[in-house]
Amino acid sequence: MKVTALILLIAGCVLVTGCTTRLCDLTVVSTKTIDLQDLDLEGVDRAMNVTGTSYKQVFFIVPTGTADIEEAIDNALDKASGDLMIDAVVYWKYWYIPLIYGQFGFKVTGHVVKTKSWTSKLPPQ
Image 1 (cartoon, rainbow, N blue to C red):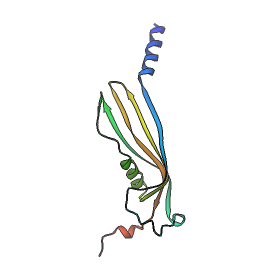
Image 2 (image 1 turned 90 degrees about the vertical axis):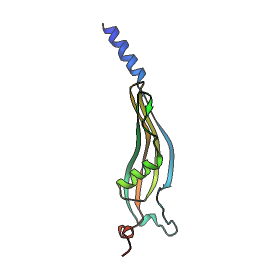
Image 3 (image 1 turned 180 degrees about the horizontal axis):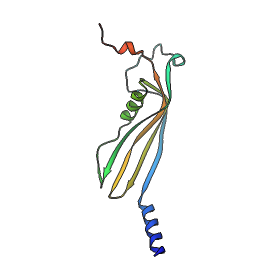
Image 4 (image 1 turned 180 degrees about the vertical axis):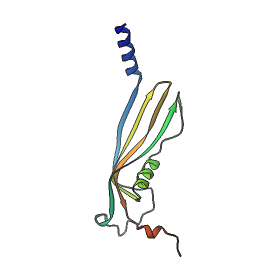
């Protein structure tokens, strides 16, 4: 009985797969339009170590969509109300239980900088 349980445990561990891969390091990245002409990164507000994600699910063998790096960056920028990320690191992550369920997608971590004041986003009077 104990041998059967051990074999089932080993088989279960072998079937569950997962991986995290560091894709790239980016010094400056944004999905927003920014004027970099007179930008001084030393004097701007920043939120440290903000993480944005874009994950999709897999049911059976059918994915629910396509994960997107841009969506992960936008998620991080929205979390910190910023418009630019510095020292960003992009990861590809997935885990999967064959023929049952899994997740895959991108994770972006970095410092979010707010280069524009909130008043510049107001509609003109």
